[in-house]
Length: 175
Image 1 (tube, rainbow, N blue to C red):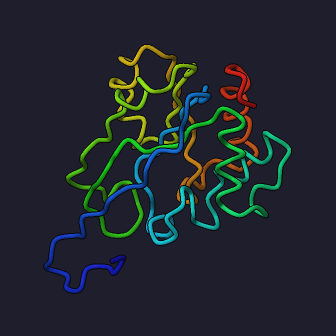
Image 2: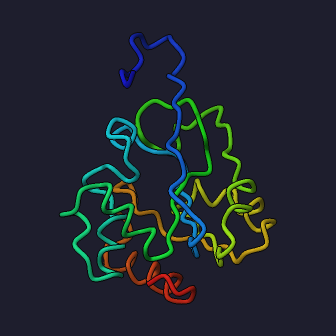
């Protein structure tokens, strides 16, 4: 299911994204673009070992999230009022880089937001996700562009990413 293309002249595989992690107590929704291959293979958001997403949340909340099983990380995120999803439901892509995403089909963000009565803000994790800011702004909540937690975003140090995430999370009671 997760095999790469078998021949270079074939079209890239059509990938299916992960379901949302959100509920009625969600106060902030973080939207990535689309899971990378490591995340798809593990069926876990931000599953690449060098992605800063879970370490940033752990630093914000004073928890060692990386030491927890994935299910417990999700429970912790939800307990802190954080929802997680992606802007794309499916796409074609070789590898994991956002720049390789083709023929993307968007998720029903408006449909999800209607189920989140306590939602205060939406934050885009990185530039590709932020390309959907026009759509998310129309949902009637404050919208932010956060620096990507991806290991491909090497121009931002962990500390610099953490400071940017802390500012947005704190302003909406999620830090």
